[in-house]
Image (tube, rainbow, N blue to C red):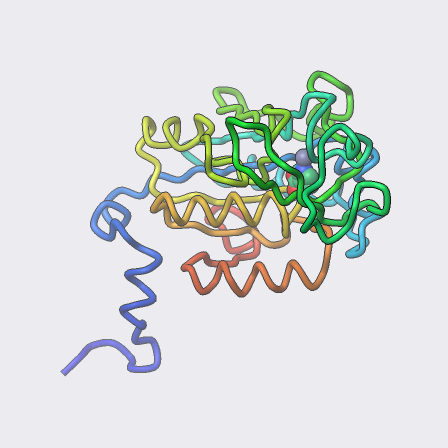
Length: 261
Ligand code: VGL
Ligand code: ZN
């Protein structure tokens, strides 16, 4: 005999996957909003999303994130910054600075923007580095690396800088693309006893998806707020959605968040 509707019975495996710390999460959830890379270069600069295949408008996330910041009482807010030195490995303009591996699908000479190349790594890193070539973007301290001017700056926020090593890219705000080094984000969330992570920002299929995946791996209950994200490639967005969902990430619209009208 049960007092709940069978239709609403939850799949316990699914539940466990999303709630790896069920008691803690249920008794005292502590939420963090992680605002990924809402920087000028992803909105109006060389890497503006509307010039990428998905043709999405990055600036549309700004009023939505502002509303979420104002209406939803998150315990913790974090801003992440793609923060590259000028000689960064991910820049198309820098493709001749490093040796491409013989097995690279395309040579530096033939490569075009958004192609994946394989570089030979420097000694202390991996031997081979797979790298998508993006137009130069978010160079440290440049105007393109600043947060969009209209994005509300929450006081007492955490600020996380990634992609600072010239030899390795970092889509996620937790680890670089080869998980060789981590940022301070996980430690800072842990210090504040965060259980639940809500991810918003740019780009859905690149840095947002990678950050959400690593949040799950770090045992946070993780939600991606879909209408507060914009991406590069439609197919890739759908693909990331499937993989993230399989791994226990939930996808929500901002209007379901408590406090939003
Ligand atoms: C990003 C491409 C290159 C992002 C960063 O923030 O999504 N995309 N670097
Ligand atoms: Zn980047």
